[in-house]
Image 1 (tube, rainbow, N blue to C red):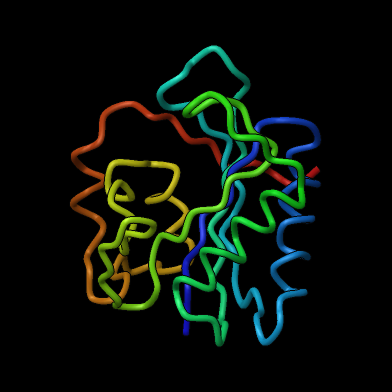
Image 2: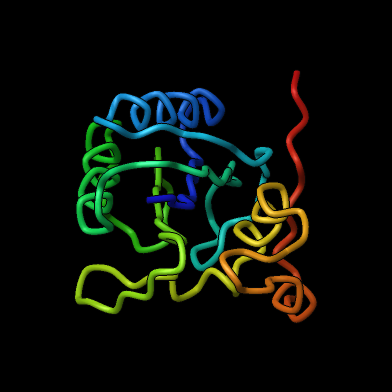
Length: 159
């Protein structure tokens, strides 16, 4: 199954956190990161008194079903030292499953596609890196971008 996973970080070495996360995903059994967007620097949403985030989207191929992938993502977060304290607060790593191909799931622990992806420029802009025509699993995301105000995102250039 193909997944689109959002990775965000705003504590410590943000680029290294992303690389460590990608390495951890690639260590999962029968799971590979097959593509990645550029890294984007983004302003925080919700709680504003924190550092900017680095965000990236990953295309991941895995034999895991969505519930197993959610568990794997939460395990990676815990393994990297994420502590859940303040909602929308600072974090060393945050993984969200945005899409699991065309699957639609609504459960207590998991909603797919992610219920707020269309409200987040830091998800929509990187999606265009992975899907340049703007069609993501039969959904045209371009109209969502036109309706968003603010939420500045800036592509991070390689040093």
